[in-house]
Image 1 (cartoon, rainbow, N blue to C red):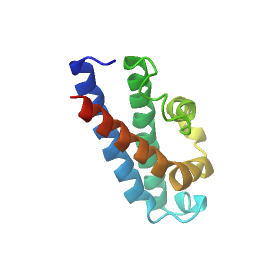
Image 2 (cartoon, rainbow, N blue to C red):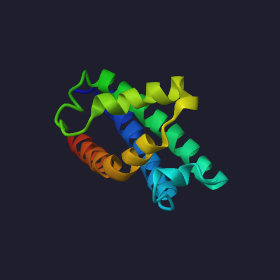
Image 3 (cartoon, rainbow, N blue to C red):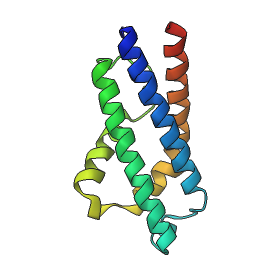
Length: 129
């Protein structure tokens, strides 16, 4: 169980994650294939900015997991939390090895479900207040 201050901090972090997910979705709209990230200056800018947001999201979920002692993420077993938290390390420490196909797959197939989970977490936490 989170204290009121912890709940407030986690809600704020989840709202920041929501904002990042919205930015990623907006920037991903013009991307149709993983090659679109590499074929133009604009594509590379999208790849860079999306990657930075994924780093922030991964770090945020690491912190949320630590604060909640795993309890907040546990009900959402269909979300690959280990991968979300791990992508932060991969992108941060191996930035020049970013795989546009992996970033494309994340954006194309995984972020909508994550956005739903974040919305649900926020609703549940706010209902506890």
